[in-house]
Amino acid sequence: MPYYRRVGEVPPKRHTQFRQPDGSLFAEELMGQEGFSSDSSLLYHRHRPTAITSAVPFEAPAWSRVPNLPLKPRHLQTGKLGGGPTGTVDPVLGRQHLLANDDVRISYVEATEPSPLYRNAIGDECLYVSAGAVTLESTFGALELREGDYAVIPTSVIHRLVPKDGAVKLLTIEATGHIGPPRRYLSVRGQFLEHAPYCERDLRGPTQPILAEGYDISVLVQARRGWTEHVYANHPFDVVGWDGCLYPWAFSIHDFEPITGRVHQPPPVHQTFEGPNFVICSFVPRKVDYHPLAIPVPYNHHNVDSDEMLFYTGGNYEARRGSGIEQGSISLHPSGFTHGPQPGAVERAIGVEAFDELAVMVDTFRPLDLCEPALAIEDTGYAWTWNRDA
Ligand SMILES: [Fe+2]
Image (cartoon, rainbow, N blue to C red):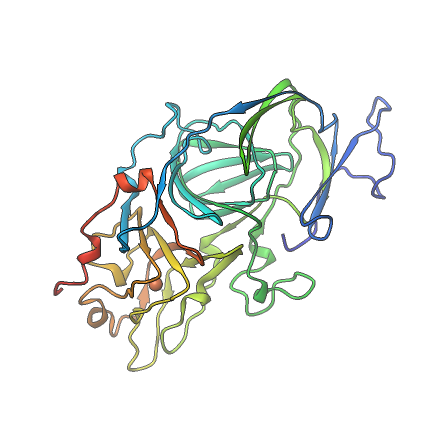
């Protein structure tokens, strides 16, 4: 996370005595990344954050995964997903995995119920709220998320997601490692530079601690070798204060300032986050290319080292018109296949001054496999849609 934040009460000096009203010590916890060599925060708990009373294996929904063979561009229709696998649909266990490799797992969920308390020990999660609203409650406090918000939840933060006012629709991107702003947009000390498409003022973090009471509290832990249910002696949301540079944070796609030019700008201008072996980009409404002879839609392209997933979440995506792509669609254009605008899109776009598209893209450096739910919602004719006249 780029910058320092302080919430609630913390002692003036780290690692010193900090006492509760009854005279006992608060329990200090350092949560940090990369072996004490990267961002961290210090949290002050009312109870020991180490006190668990049981640990049992937990069977989370699991999906089979097959390679993208025969190699084809794919179109997935998330509107056809139906309910989750668990009966009650919550934003964690209700996730239906769609595309995955060893670096990243991309899922979709339409959830109505609160999730269990949950920690992902494999890596950071990036959530994108495509519709509805949800409260992200964690040991760091609450963060309200609404349509268009990304939230980055650092590895192992105990949290839960509580949908508000009906269903929330989430695209979830689970990394094997850490997700943050692109390094080229940050100074050596982590400040956003002037050419970045967003900056500190656009970010939100928790503002107040959550103090919950309770005993024998279940927390589901997703780790590299599987899931476990830990029971904590006391409620983990018992932090009276914390400070540091590691915490859940949110950023609205509507605050992403598009970078435009006289001729077509390449996808890196849309980059919003980076993770290990993948990037996340935002395509937002914008004025488009203004050279007198400009062609505003992308040229045919083949980014030979990447698979490209695009989630169409708002507006109209000009380059895909006529392909069957609609709101909620996901396209996968894999390495080994040249993709480009649908027939007719280039001529149609000439002279257009603005696009109102809203889409989230994930480009991965290793191939994405197709998960079982993806196969059930595939529009199998998509691969042939460039082979006809507009
Ligand atoms: Fe592309």
